[in-house]
Image 1 (cartoon, helix red, strand yellow):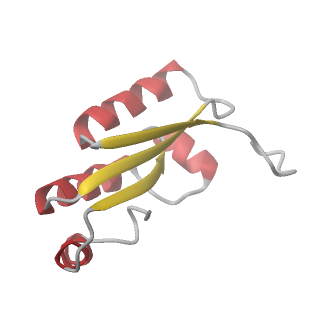
Image 2 (cartoon, rainbow, N blue to C red):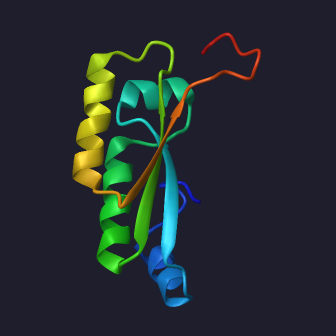
Length: 106
């Protein structure tokens, strides 16, 4: 498992050469507004670029998403669907949002 902002083409290439065959990325959403709300510091453009690189290198790529984030609307969901279609992950895992913290922001 990795983050799209911590790998680049060279890193993914070296991982593949070292024997890595599968890599999942915590993406959460295709909506920049939701990504900002979650404060994860990534963009849909980074997500798409990283998945294209992983696919080009031949790694099986997985996408981990969260649905039901407070404030998420149909437009945000549609952006996530478009992100999935453009990124072409080979695996996906979808989790329902559930806050375990006392953070009232979410």
